[in-house]
Length: 358
Image 1: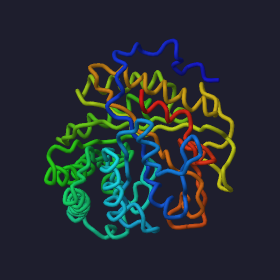
Image 2 (image 1 turned 60 degrees about the vertical axis):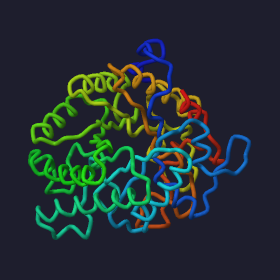
Image 3 (image 1 turned 90 degrees about the vertical axis):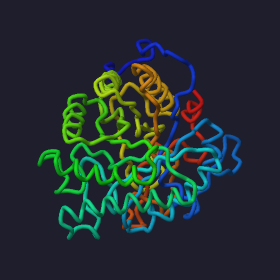
């Protein structure tokens, strides 16, 4: 057991029992899951639209990633437009997560889309602007503007390597960020722009990075944080970081990615991201998963001046469905995340989903 994590008896005293303003989930896998035959059920075993189930449990935001030219044809403009219409019908607000890549972008990989590889830096900035503008414009035209747009995904090491890599300083990255932000502002000035880093417990990293982009004149609205307990340290570190960010930068903060396993058993033949026993304050059980989220919610409630807006569970609906695996270039791959979804191996809601109403 990791006894360094904040336990329920020493969590911050909540200032209000009103639900957090944002109770969200990344559900980027849903469209493909449904197309491949994925079915979701409520607690009684009745088949239902996953969005209906999530909304009935209190979810009010959904996050979707956008890739430029994904090998599987998903995560592009047509899917986000379709899903945005469904969100509107369910009164769910949209967060658009631009990866500026053809596949997964995270701290270890920020690869240019194939179509952008030959561009010079000016061309790259124009491509970022045009791609961001195209998606946001299409959403506006069908009456489904996002509430939040995220420019880049987990970009502490920059994006669109090597041009936007932070090892070369912040000038290149800042220019690319400004291009994306300008596109959002040109479409809808009121949409809130988020910048998102991983490693939510590392306050020194966040200070270095946000000091760096602010010194370059990058203007944004929200700070997004990934926090996975098995990677990013104890909850006390997350609390310290969120509190400091809110006060230092006078920005609202969101834990825009979090998750935890409800089991270490595998639902398919692909090894999961978290598959072996590991030391943490929470057991890998449905109750442990729920307690982890409950404690993260209390940390967010404790952020000064009400600047802790909420959370997004990643990827809440990624159940085991043949064809909907982790590698978009290989349809035979399985899911490496199904034991961290908010639906169990019978595709029914797990107890953690009840906390979206809190």
